[in-house]
Amino acid sequence: MDILFELFLPKNIEPESFGLKEILVEWAGEECSQDPKKYQWNDVVIFEEYKDTVSYNKLIGNEVTLTNYDSYTLKGDSINQLQELIVNNNPITNNHIYLFFNEFLRNLSSWVVVTLIDYDQFDKIYKVNNVDEAFYLLEKSCHPEKPEGIALIKNNL
Image (cartoon, rainbow, N blue to C red; front, side, top):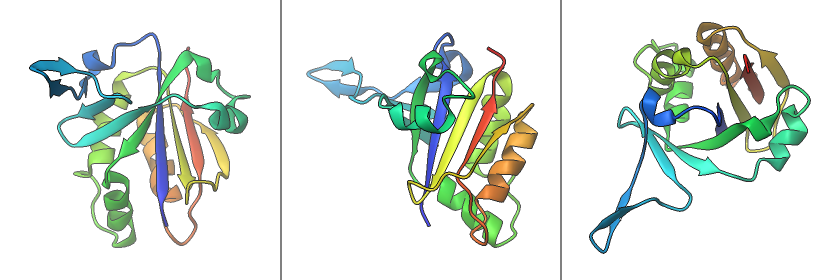
């Protein structure tokens, strides 16, 4: 089972001020942005900018105005590592996604996380009040016995 993880951050924030840093490449002696841009949090969690959010608008557009947000796709195997911990009933407190929720998203008043199972299964929208509630729902939705594609919306815009 593959899980697609999309992060939506308000356009009016500077992600760098919360520790999400752009990954630059050197070309002809100059540092340049990649296309699409890539961002890294704590040297472990990597996101790639994603501009085509029309399909997400169909899923959650009635709940949140996505034009107010920039979208980022999680890259790497962090979500798979989380799922493995869940399946094996191991502690998750050192997992990169858990830490990202606790140390990054906790500092933002508005954000959206969307997960799709096998890139197309979407089941439920949750409006959440805090990262603890959101992570509990994410953890529950990643369990392979009953996987769910979900949207977690913390929206104080």
